Amino acid sequence: MISKLEAEEKLLKIFYDVKLDRYLKKTPTHANIDMFEETKDLNHLEHFYKVKDDELVIAMWANSYEHGIPFFAVNMAIDSAESWRGDPLSKYLIIYTISHMLLPLIFFFLGYIIKSKSLFGAILINLIVTGVIIYFVVLKNNWKKRVLIRYREFFDDTGISISEEKFKQYSKRLYNDFSSFNTIQCFAFFLLLLSWVIIFT
Image (cartoon, rainbow, N blue to C red; front, side, top):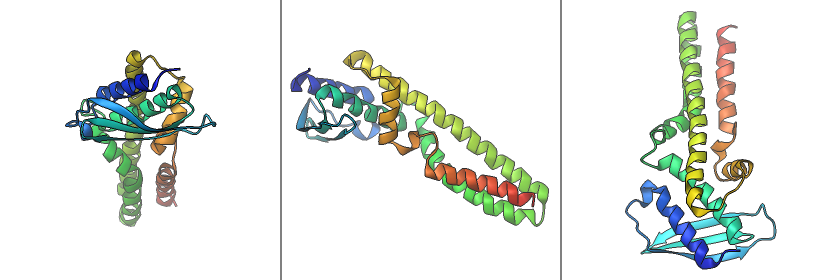
């Protein structure tokens, strides 16, 4: 069991290791676990943090500090891969998110309109959007790997580790897009499939 002070030191170190853009100008000198609620269910994990003046204020719901810190770090790893300025993938993630919904929808209607004038044009448009979606699926997989790399970087120094299976479980809870397929993605692929069916009917 680690003490509250040791837990706060680890959390502060993780905060500085992440270098999130939105906290770039914030320089807390210490962390304070302002509220800790012990949970009996090991799957019940939550946390909240903010920077107030020179203090990193944290609220944590967990079975113990050792139980809560990895969950906090997974969250920071996801934020890091999403917005850390040193990550070359970060600038594409907004485009990736938008593309899953807008691209198939736009090209679905565009292909339908063009089909009446040129079947070749409709096929060409569908090939383009299919290629773009495949590209962003590959990008997403690379980003997921980047999150795992960032997480491991944190824990080289903190000394607290969890299994890759547990890491993925926490990630899916914290960030829906970490799942293999979410609702929006399934809808996007459905539209894409439907657009191909319409072209050849």
